[in-house]
Length: 241
Ligand code: URA
Image 1 (cartoon, rainbow, N blue to C red):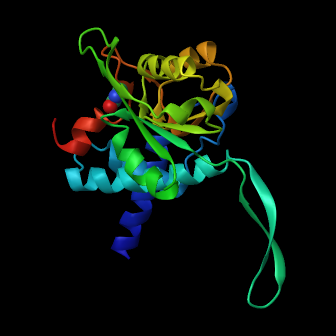
Image 2: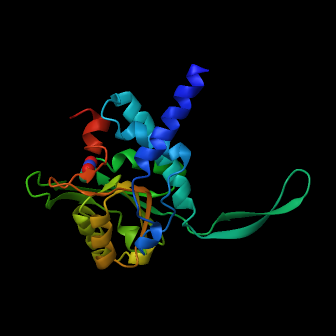
Image 3: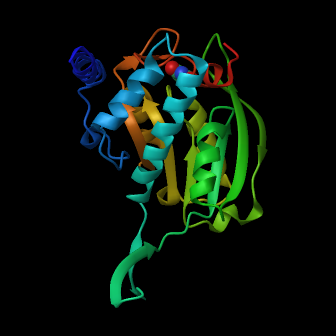
């Protein structure tokens, strides 16, 4: 009995702590998914946010949330009706019409969702970009990129970047992709957590992109960290904090 009580207490606490956001997906035209985390997402988000979570617990929670993010990305892709035969009868089903031909990982944190996304889209080319943020000013600094020459003609490009804070890094990435011929409407940004300030910035600059998210948090703090957020995603995942 005690065990069940503790379980429901944890659930209701998880819900009250993670539903602080008053933002709706309709507040941002670029957000193309629901942002009311499911119970499953709330439980893993709570474990991801908790400063007492061990590295193992953090990684497990990150993997669960990224798998759920893949499902949300699928909801943004065009499908087509197909007719197949089961061993018993013919029936209609659906298949992807929009092939995700390219994934762009914003190193280092973007490599974490990349590992999971590339299993779901095993034919996609993997493009990498490294932009570091100045710890003092939070300004993005370009370091490295390696894009496939076929990216210009891509029908769908997924950018993996778990945290959208100021939007500065993503802005640089999207501008680079555009300069390589990628159209805004063909870009899907897959992120776990975003600050409203970053989303507003991206919406003004790139009104036609698509953003798929788990949660929109309250605000950026004075150090440009997302609040309540989860701290530095890469450091906690890789163990470099
Ligand atoms: N990057 C992170 O990992 N965390 C933040 O809060 C902001 C940017």
